[in-house]
Length: 399
View (tube, one colour):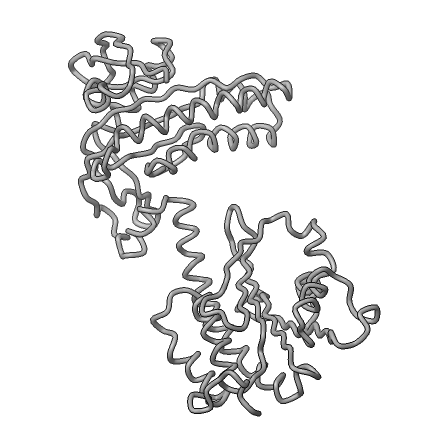
């Protein structure tokens, strides 16, 4: 097979070279989209008339069903697009190659040079015809334990792919499956850790911080939030409504925290624990901005709840600052990556006091000193705090 006209013959090589590179030359590349783009360029240099290619990966992610990696002739980097969970209900999926492959097809082949009325009818085929492509093929990409993803190739060569082209492309797929599965599993591990323990804790765990009792002392602003009357709600509302209610509440609280650099360490029933390490510039002010935005989000959520006949949600937030022990705590076989210490206990006690004192957000004097010049605070006096010897001067925030 001749190399495409724009490929320097001096740098062209065989498909075996491509397979060797894919097997041995990608060990240090973390991202599958970079590998896929380089693969397509090397396939061209090996004489295959690939004009466009896509790799479709199903992933386990709370927001996304999968990802589409797309490469076209002339691109040095592939385009990565996320696919949401509802895509299978939409026209872009129904009748598409993805639909056929996920329904069990072992090959989808479409000749764009023939009368379009004789071929498959879908917008993706019309798009490729409009770009001058002549032939298209899609194959499943098999990962272990029955996981099926898929890959596609298209060409603008008159007459389309010949049998030798298809055989060469098929010879690459087993190695592409192995290489892509490693990256997908690595990304899955990161995604699951980010989802369940937070991004910073996830990075520490991946770096080897998995031994019980290991940890470090961190100076941090601590925020603990709890929903009011949740027991009554959970006892009287249908299960699905309670879950939907909690998800809306946690979205309103957690998204501003993440936006402003906080780390959510855990959800406990209807409670949330987050920290803002003081190593970050303006950590305490960032926490206050997060609280302000969370309050606005809760106002909007409660308005939506009223429209659907639900009672408004009330909550309390306790905020303190101090040193915490940040690390692995638990049994020999089941660990939790969290923070402990008197400063965490103080934040928890302040949250409990919000109901007693009729304030939504309570700050300790220690934390208030960091933000009093930039935020309007209400002094609510000194109050005894369970577990601490001396009364604590408290401030409320209404912003």
